[in-house]
Figure 1 (cartoon, helix red, strand yellow):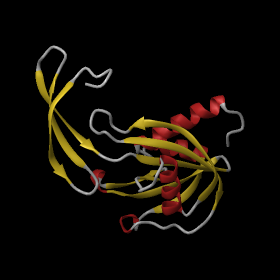
Figure 2 (cartoon, rainbow, N blue to C red):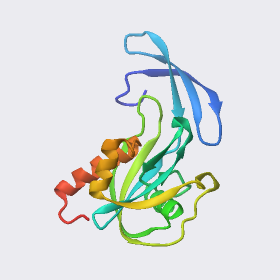
Figure 3 (cartoon, helix red, strand yellow):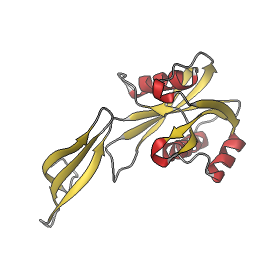
Length: 184
């Protein structure tokens, strides 16, 4: 066991796998010696970008098949890149066409720590320059728009931004702004 672990993995097996994820089932032993199983999803980490300018944000909206509805969020995704910041730069350019002169790492969070291994790396992008989006085929229905901070908060309250990563990223931004003067 690794330091800090209290549950010992006895075995692991892949129950399902595709290009985007692997579902595993592990046999485990708890500290009291009892045994059980954990099912979880192995997914690569992803980057989420808060593109901020003029006291507002650039958002993207697309149809999210698992929840069967369109949803607004900050640009995000997994890209082949050497670092999380490079992944963030790729995702911002692909989804919005925007490039940023300044990048600030706001933190990393567990995406769904009871269900998946995936982490999200949150970045603030400022000094934005426009360009052409290079969306993937699967993002063909994606829309983009700039909203003021007040409008964004209204969208949060109305449930138009229901993506937990975007909500958590906004909380990280708010905390960052409390301790960093003139961050926008």
